Image 1 (cartoon, rainbow, N blue to C red):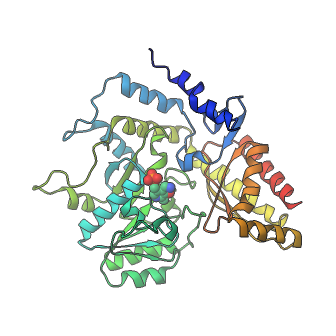
Image 2 (tube, rainbow, N blue to C red):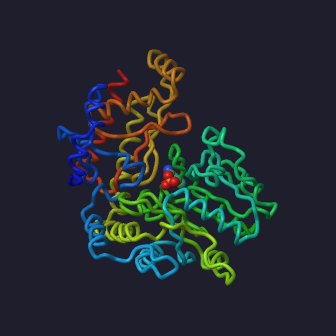
Image 3 (spheres, rainbow, N blue to C red):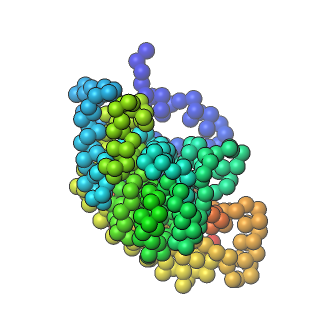
Length: 426
Ligand code: PMP
């Protein structure tokens, strides 16, 4: 029999099972910022696979690059030899990073990028300890899990990596105290924390940079979520003009087609790990630098530039944030909208009116986040907009839209939020 993926996808056993349990919708197609169900209803995707589809889904430029990669019969994974595509992608990425970062390491995911940064920091500094932030998220493998700022992710999986400790985000004094023993290999931080979209104070990251220098600690920026235009700059660190020693990246880098990750670093760090005559490879993995990931990465960066997606992220994203923020005067339980570019949190708090206060208290007691579901569910059902409940107290509706949102999408989002919050308010 001929292998027919389309037939398998549309007519498969799974869809029949879903139907029997009353689940009558599945997505059959995805283009740009839109998903389409089997009835051709259009949904505006403001989750982007948790920040993966910065350039939108199924972008034709990336598809044709991948197609070419396959049809040209390029040599893939010729281990222990030069990988031309990875060199090209490294070159393109390093054009975007601060000038102190001159080398690229490639891997297959965000968590692997963080694992590499941990190992490289330890090896370069000859120190063991790593400091991270409360509420941080850097991935879920054993090393990155040891740097997870939410106890719920860590509990039951110990013992984790020794020598890892947390400091509050946005607190230079606490960081100085942690670093002052001069035995910390690295401080790792998300420029904007993904959980709840926590923004740093204006001077925080420059203080971080100074303190790390002062105590000989490497400054690692985890830009897995904030990177590649998400916040309206190519890298979020550009908002505060800082130069980390390493930048971790992943998610959006391959346009959403193939897993990819990477770390940009100084020559000093790269050389300390790899310039050893006694061992050719001390860290790496079989599939890193694979052709599909590298050519998808090259095409993705091309699209970002051609379509001015970083600029669009800033323009449309900042406008959405400001417009939603202005609604706080209309709706008392809408606390604030915050973020930068297309990294957006809409936070709610207990309302003052007695009936709503009682409803809030009941919902919160039953299940943290239920109140926010009163926003995300109608957004989805009535307005066909995908969003998620997030934040430390699950009190935030979080949006990570594709960076190519149009004015029309923007108007749809604003009208849908206004109507949904108004209805919830009644
Ligand atoms: N770091 C940050 C800041 C992230 O947001 C994530 C994923 N949400 C990761 C690391 C882990 O990436 P991955 O899921 O690809 O391992």
